[in-house]
Image (cartoon, rainbow, N blue to C red):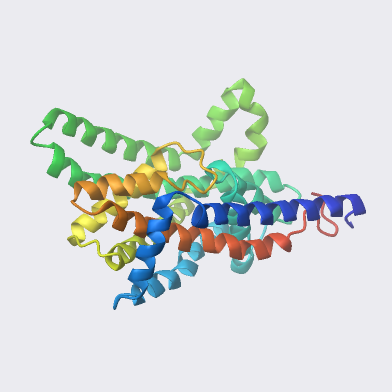
Length: 329
């Protein structure tokens, strides 16, 4: 059915608000933020004038692959609700990225993907989106736990053996627990159903119990693939900004940074901008690297993988229709 005039006005106002807020936050982050951003700008200019500037281009070329993994995950997840082409899945990911950019902890990602569906049971997609994000978190925890082994053995084992051993046990337990939860999604649905205040959400998350172990494994491999692309991008940028380390140190530092960024709570409106930067500066500081060089690589990673795609996603937000012909919202 057609959208009524008053709903069209509200839709246009909503789109305009998303566009305006996204551009405003981008401006605030890049042009009017503290000295760290200004210093990053100068370092970035010098890096782009160096013989290694091709690394920046290579990192940028990996952006579509990064979000392509996420689109493929959403395509597989969404099949439980309706057939989704890869291009439609990619568009949904871009819309979700843009809306997630302006909301704490990327909560707008849920709304963006739900609004892109044609199904009358759109809200059932909430559980599917959660599974996709949880798969990515599991990949981050598994890789990050491995990366932390380097820091535990090099910086903590001799001085604080008891603490180091406790951390090893904690990381192992966390990894096992995350995998058990992933492959027992029905248990998560049962927990929601058992808690009285949450029972009303059961229809929206029950889809989580419909994914088989084979499907979960495919989703986890896709999450690890996306993680590998993200990790490679960060390493390329670290090399560009003159951070010189051994391969093991690169892998440990980056995976540890992603791990801390994922497990530390954040309410940032800029897609957790700040948590990753602080984590990176701390871990690479242990490795004897300059704070601003690491900060520059991390901010560039955010710019390429979050800020730029969020602007691209604005195009799809403007084309978004909340109610399609013959489909109720």
